[in-house]
Length: 499
Image (cartoon, rainbow, N blue to C red; front, top):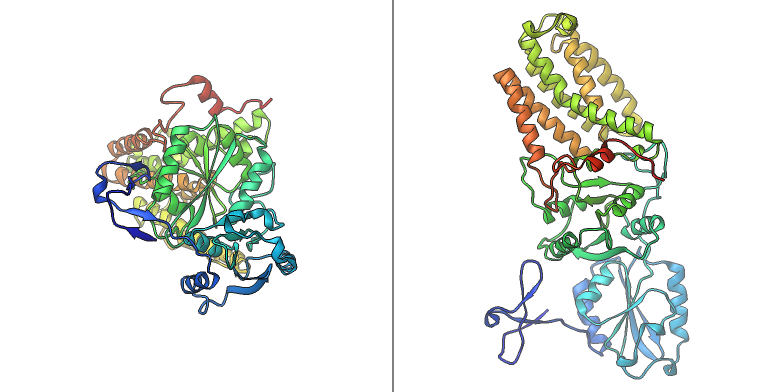
């Protein structure tokens, strides 16, 4: 970039943190001019050879050729291009005569190349970005314009149902790591001109492609503009963790509130349905997941199976998920409170008492098992598929049977924690499951220290964490419960007919 110091006859542009142009106090700012390519091919090649380190990078390819009697050079990255298309393009270039090309660069347009996706680029930085993104760039001597030919083909896996978001019915396709294919999966379901997909980028080094998807007329335009400005004004070097890095960058939430503000999904049908409801989806290249916002806790607890079954079955599945989430939060803390105060147990619940001798305090048993369950999860994730069965057998025998016989754990403690571990998998949202886990650990600690008052305080803290949480757009996290909207609340709790 060429930076020219301020002069009185030059209008300077100052930008705020959101990239908006402002004009206050211009004397302290600088006018920035974007550097363009020249008409000299070899001067341009010298620049791009140095910037792209062509001699060091084995996959950075340049190809000299003749186009209409003029020297030309192709820049591209090996592994991105389609060989059959490039072969036809090279045949076309060699067949051109001097009469086929215009005399001046001002007459040069993308129509001179018989290919669908061709752009004319003059900025050097933009040309470098195109080349590093896999676009073939053609420079011709005597012209100060570059042909950017998008004939790239990214390596990708097949479009198949994601392991995390499986459904009993419905479509069996899922997002992949290539953002263009993900947008096509959404376009296939929403054939409306109101569906808008804006291409943005972020990251000084990564220059990651980010797509902002929304329905015009349904999405909150103020929120769309706010997200657009935040993405464009991001001052980050890269997005190493794709959508999670972007989510943390565009919304810096308080770390002590674990309840999620975003909903992540790998299903294009869920994303399409959310867009039709007025939500916004953010797709990041190299991430097979869409970020949906703004979302409430009722949106996060929804699952695709709720909509693929008749109203009665879908309502039952949704109601069961709410009840199980409530039980997974309170079951072990309430049981611990009863064990500390056996006189509070009614006669018809005497069977919940621990029958064997307690060698390790029950609170410590529950906390150890909370961490042990996560340890087993991590072990299962990092275990090769061929060894997953032996791992399950070892975990079932050693942790399940020998841990009880050795006196470390009581069978009742193992039973209730087994229910909690299974109940966590009823939540399709991974972040919400861990938010409930953190609240449950807090309840256990408070009950273990303060007894009944600790349980009351823990429940109050949990309610405040949910009630005081706000969506990305600033609305209530508990809508339609707070503020109350009976019609929408009934729609969130019970599935209705779609037609």
